[in-house]
Image (cartoon, rainbow, N blue to C red; front, side, top):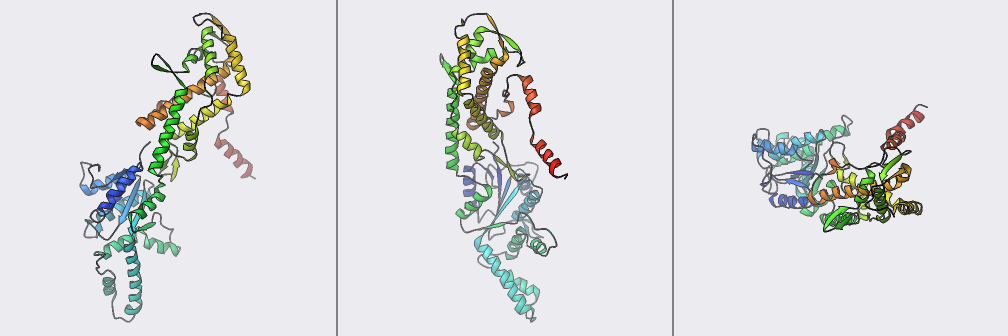
Length: 429
């Protein structure tokens, strides 16, 4: 499962402790966090440090902006574009292209100061500009005067206007253009308020809860594997071993017959009688219902299924099928199959010609358990070793006779076919 990457942009001096705390907490939640002052910050050798940061932003899924009382260094001093502001501009262009998401936060006292100076500006324009006691330049100087909280007021307040898209909002209200996107600005007084905002924006779950859940999920899947393996002379082997030779000996025609060694059929019969059908899947079902392993897709602005999510869904489906095969009718058929071949000599080379339809249910059960084993192994490899074995996973179809599967696929109704049918029925009236 790919970790989502976050770039944190702010002045470093006044946010130093907060930045390091954010990195620690977000990485505990499973994100990769980039801070330019850390040794794990990616270095691109063919560019300068400023543009290096812009290149790193391109690699990220989220851009977190923190605005405080300091301007920091300048990227373009003549036009009063700070490094932080340049990073934001670059990130916002990527946001408009659907390549990353932006989360902006500002200290509450800075936001309050902005509101106070807005009120002051309106008062000065109303009272003093009108009477010609002050001109526009003097009023602007008063609005942007230095204080203990804010030294470069004009730079920071102008930056806040850009982040909130002040000018665009005014035009949108007048109906002159559409409302801007990505201009929400969270305010905060302390670290806890930042985490509360990020928890909502990033849809963060408790790291402790997540770790406990994954441990329970691994325990459940390991329990399934224990039921599907056997141990002989200290070596583990799949219980499907008993049906392997019969499985590869069938002819591909449900209405035909197969010539199979009798002892292969005996071993298959032993397997379908002793297999465990009541496999636990409580945490597997929970992982699916809560979309636990889905990832957020920046382009579509939705959560998409990952390989592990798809594997869990298929695993739950196979386990559910196995429980259905435990009905009294099927158990009776399996017992009759076992009775027919139980007295065959395990060393005999004799053959039996058997109707394929008689083999259908035993082989369906064999394929189902084999799929369960393969899915469990792949999921554990991902959770324990971060190995992606899903791309090479080859599962058996629902029907062991491929010619029958082709017929079933022709009868399968796709979602698009339903929509097309409804479109023709209702939209052409």
